[in-house]
Image 1 (tube, rainbow, N blue to C red):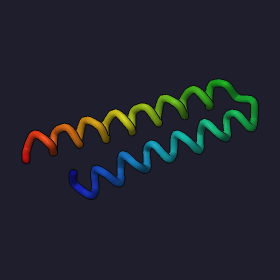
Image 2 (image 1 turned 90 degrees about the horizontal axis):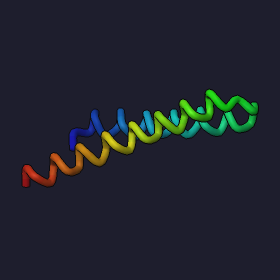
Image 3 (image 1 turned 120 degrees about the horizontal axis):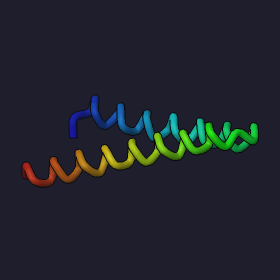
Image 4 (image 1 turned 30 degrees about the horizontal axis):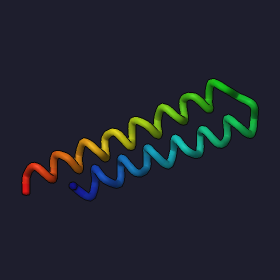
Length: 57
């Protein structure tokens, strides 16, 4: 996996986790849901990239 893409995906997952936690702390369900969505997108992109890399080898 390219280091740049990996870092981008990890950052998206981390950003989502922060957003979810902040939403919980503030009682903001919308922010919490957006955070979970960002985490899922980051995780999905990481998984797709890993599968793509596995097929190359």
